[in-house]
Image 1: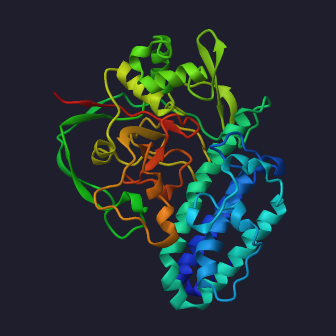
Image 2: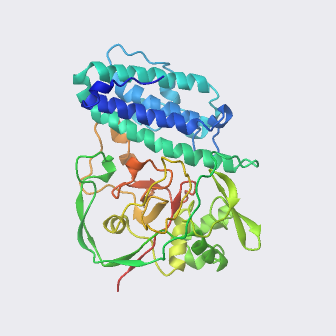
Image 3: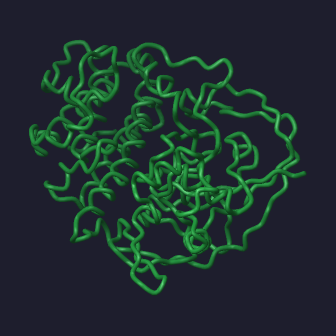
Length: 420
């Protein structure tokens, strides 16, 4: 369906939110257009989810957290979906096990699209008719839209992982651009001292970006750009995956247990050359591109080998470079290096900081309290965004987080070192 937003009233807060809702939901649909019905049901590992599940879960969020509490007379599309598409909200009851999302051949893809249209129409009608209700749920709807954008990124990273396991090496979209030469690597000095960290202002931010607080930093240097594939190849050629002295103990155990000897999606073709699987299909490796799909352990090992380290998330934020152009809208869904810009937004950049609450952190109220706070253990923070990150999520304060073994995200390396 096409969500209705009357042009003559787009200046009202309600109409602007309706337009944003239509835009975000429409973009999720655009992301699925290159996929077959069979593609929508793929789940390649427990950490990934089928595209169909992402589409249904983001709809479940609006139905469960917005419409059911706020829309009088709202009737659920299918009460059974409450359990099927709940992700991790313990307060809302039982959930279908995450590793088994790929067995959900039913509901069909057609039924999931009908579910989306049903919820979209109900929410649009509610926003159009009731100003009082709109004020009560504005922040929750906005959270839901940013939540859906997070899942847009996951749709791309998850389908890439699934396609990489297919011997046919399917192409999600044709490539539309080439990588240019990277800028020379430079070390940029930062004086340290007392700095303010965290979100400031009235624009949207997730609760884990707050409250703004002060942190003391010792003087340090930050690399001017992410590490390239060619630079990482030097680590490989020097026995990086075979020499335990560069690795954290748990990282070395992972290397041994999983047989890591290259970044994810790299394939050796002979003569010291590589092919690379991308959302644009299999192609020749390019030494000038930012290296990505690295675990924290690989990033930390490279940093140790290079005589440097990974930055803390506070060093990263305080020294964040100017934002590099993000290519998400034009669908160049692979890291690129622009010789005229050294910034962030190409690959998520691992930091050495544990994902923990800021001083004075308070989770959101109600069910939404489970959104971020409950994951603040056993994870590492990444900063900067990637080539598949929606533009609205590219800000210096954004805190992404994954376990140190995660490789299927577009994660890379920016180095730091102490000034002594």
